[in-house]
Length: 168
Image (cartoon, rainbow, N blue to C red; front, side, top):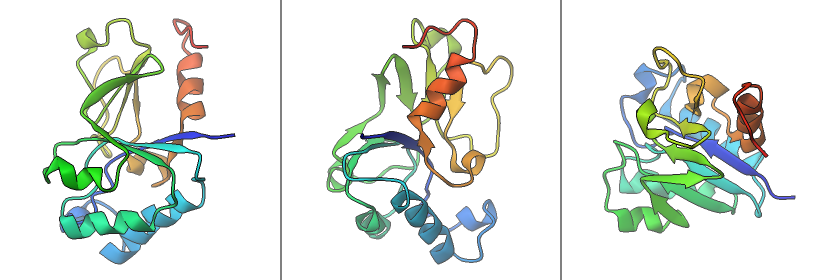
């Protein structure tokens, strides 16, 4: 049975990322993401990368070390390379789309734009949290998930626990 996973903000090629993450080296940082990916992802799985994955052409090469699967990128504010470069490593590249009645994007969208969607699956915030009513948001920033991928089943369970939720 295939699975669906979400992740964001890998920051490969971002020289300053170690100021914000507790790794001894950029090599350890990168290896952690790659190892965590490869220990759970199988070839029939789908992984949504919600932005800020790789900053340089050279750092994109690290994605070749990932297990084969369907990879979908949602561009983040730091994904500034030519989109054709990302297409070499990802099956699809988007900015904002709906998936299974959720908005999927790098940054959380304004509550008034949620409209009739169940909620918003996003990254971008790292260790920060949304102010106010955040029950319609699920942040897949790696800092909040031990630098591991988030199974879509966990996200659905989170929303299922909300009494207003009508998920199938």
